[in-house]
Image (tube, rainbow, N blue to C red; front, side, top):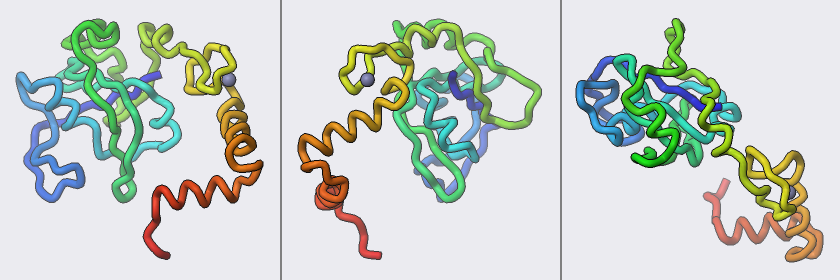
Length: 176
Ligand SMILES: [Zn+2]
């Protein structure tokens, strides 16, 4: 599955949480410009959006940018996609850039989700726990917790508290 963002009309903005001075699309915008204009900020379901690896930014009926999503940042009640535009040579880029929006629908909502036939093989990769299984996600089902628990056993004597303290010492949090 991929997330598709549809750009509206060009408009100048100020005080933007992503530091932009415009959103929306304009003729001949570059792929980087389209990605910056489209990656936020939207009301979206956090877990749904975070599960997508690819994003299409569409405007004026065509795909203006194809990006790999690396995460989400929250801005009030909205979210921005973090990632980078894919470039020529990447199969998803070459399949969609400049072509009609493959996920076009009648909805007024800029954000929609759908599967792209080309992304299937790209999503298959070895499970990050090292078990050797192939998966379309970072981990095979349940193996994320297995990987964490294994490290808790190996490095923290089985204590989740020790892991939490170690993380907190590496990433000090503001006092509450
Ligand atoms: Zn695994």
